[in-house]
Image 1 (cartoon, rainbow, N blue to C red):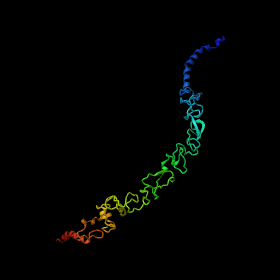
Image 2 (cartoon, one colour):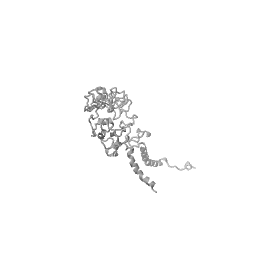
Image 3 (cartoon, helix red, strand yellow):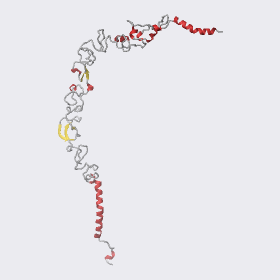
Image 4 (cartoon, rainbow, N blue to C red):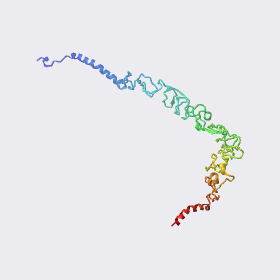
Length: 330
């Protein structure tokens, strides 16, 4: 048997080459497209680091190796540095030792302001005190500090916090009360002027006139309550001061509400107490029983203002008579 008769016939290898090439032409482009989409999800033209590329964030088309670095807390250009001095919007940095966001001296470097002990704003006049900087509120203090760094402190600064100011009045007559007609000064330090902390003086040229002074018979308002000794606010004929002394109402002509004005009930001095109960008529509404048209016929009144007992007997007997007659009837 010949050697060719012992082995099966096999196609020559070169005969399969056309088939192999055809398969590659059909499958190759589709497979290449799939690989490209998996490695550049954001379609920014840069493959992700997972595919061996340099795109450090394949979900953001604005982040890739050729992007511009900005102060936004992200590594825009994928150089491993977030923000930094190469950022397009980096600004000069100031030394900020107290960390209040305001610096004193420029450092000569640029940055985004998130560097330790650095700030983007200057103008701090006390870099060892975080409460002092250009955006702080000026306030009254014993040290006279310039909290807002505008060169003015306390009373010299019109922007000072008004909650810390104290009212001071000028006291021309030295009676301890300031002129009520003058506007009080508002100061951090009341000691800057010779004044007092209480106003209300209705005559700052008369030391005997001020709130709390005794009212005297001179036609003046000595205690600055708006009234003189002759004032009669309710027109009942009794001066307000007299009504106040007796416990009457200076604004009500009939203090006890009995229909009689205080002036008509008051009488002389001491005031009238018709029923002798220790309460003057102007304050005693029950003394109405003693008006002329309400007195009993005999005019006799008991100590407590009631009709005398003997004057009531006729009335009592008249009421009992019918009962007595009924009992006698057979």
